[in-house]
Amino acid sequence: MTNFTIFLVLITIVCFLLIIVIMVQNPKGGGLSSSLGGSTQMGGVQKTTDFLDKSTWTLATILIVLILLSSLSFPGMMGGSDSKIIDNKELAAPKTETPAPAKPAETPSK
Image (cartoon, rainbow, N blue to C red; front, side, top):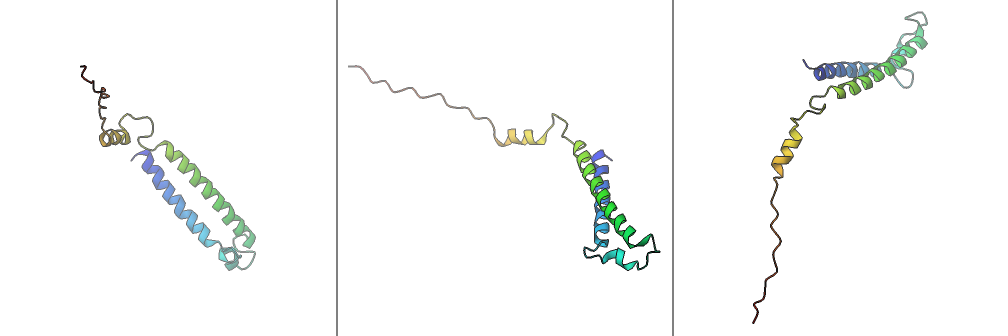
């Protein structure tokens, strides 16, 4: 497995976790925090809201860092001479020879 593949798998996992954490929250205070009822369960409603908020920001930060690190490990970006783009450009637009400029026609002298 290449480094890029590892980063791709990690980014997918973090995205999935971020979706779950965001879907658990409710912008009007409903979500998971309202279903816990009393303050004795799992540290109370306020603690659950704080945990979900911190986990959202943490996962978002991890996602950004993984994306930046994966761009460094992208195959073919570190100055490799076997670039497919350059090869395709040379094949698509072959060099054409420019014709020599035409000399003006000479008039015969009488």
